[in-house]
Image (cartoon, rainbow, N blue to C red; front, top):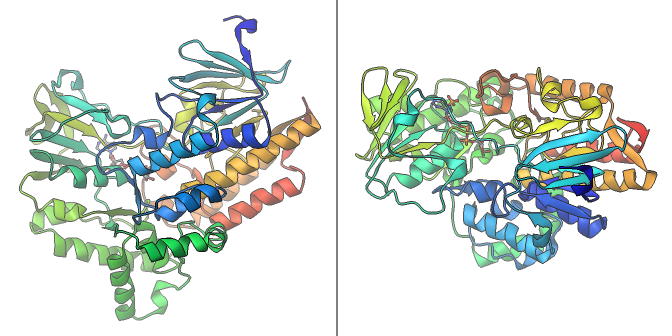
Length: 534
Ligand code: NA7
């Protein structure tokens, strides 16, 4: 395509999920820019468009899984349960897009494949797979931290005659009733889909690599009085969320687990178990489960005890019981462990007996067993954070590729900008705050919009210095090294993808501190940025 076929706009937003829609709203409706969002899906909603598998649900409290600034929508919102299921989040996002007049500015089925910076003009050129092409002064990447599917390589999979789905690319229509279904993966997605499908399908075979700690979800109807109370107090609720650590809408504990008696600890854990919520169990019970091995073991052994009580067959219970630290993303469920008491649910421990290959009728494990399946579901997670960017050919100053910039470790300044990539901003770029996603992305989208307003006024390009990026990356690694989280393999540290660097991808210093750091950067006149003119 020649230069003059490129459509000139002020800004391109990549993605139309939670982050992309908010960014588009800020840029168009608040800054008055000519901005367009390019969305790979054939509908808006991002994560909540793609992840429509049975049981998909946000496990943040519903009243804080939304845009905090939009009081009109908050007041009109029909909040009825403690958590929001996927169709409800999607409906919320659609309603937001319609109310803010964004729908006509989202191009659907627009898979971005190239994003190149032109040193001479300081403009970005953005191209889609089907040949749509734009030039823009600003690019906002709102690709989602968990959107590039991880699909394991199973030798001979092409021979398998059944249906195959990844949970993040779920078919619009499906019928699993009476079928023999296999699920690979027991992360938060696997736990949800396994629990939801067990009663629907004929036989369910779960291929588990690592057992998980999970606590009850505790979903329930919210009373009218509770909802009235929430709506009347949103100001205070958001103040608390934005000054907390995980931003989940509950009081975080500061009490060290070992400062109370064993009996009191048990009572606190039992109360939290009855109340429900994964983040609540990890951060609402005691303040040091993520940092103190003894506190961690206390929480872990409580959950292990529950597994032993719930799961009837001792051998199945043994396989389901984790022995490592309780230091992955905390999970919660609607009866996950009890699911394995059902006669139609079978657990295959693929650490004991790895999957060796696929045959026409199912998957074969190393013990020679053929697990016959009509449907295979990959609940195998994502190439997180930089994974979605690395699938696009992004080149910054001097033609430097983003994939090379991130080869030994993903780096990003404050999670929102990358050295060598002027006027390119990232929502959930490397080393963003690890907290309830809507507040994090709201802080970032707001900050990015203000940075663009500043850049436009000053006719400047905003590009972080290498030093600023390096010191933020170092800080994030130091903070995470002070916790127990890197001691356990998970997507948070890139361990789930072969060849990926296994450093921190998040700022674990808490949402409140993160917000202050970003606010300070803007107030100090963007000192971590190169002061270049466009
Ligand atoms: P996760 O948390 O990365 O879980 C993926 C699961 O898939 C996990 O149990 C993996 O086992 C398993 N897995 C991945 N590859 C394989 C292979 N090759 N063989 C067997 N098992 C495999 O992804 P989710 O989608 O559940 O959740 C991601 C986030 O999305 C979640 O934290 C929420 O915030 C939303 P492993 O544990 O690596 O041994």
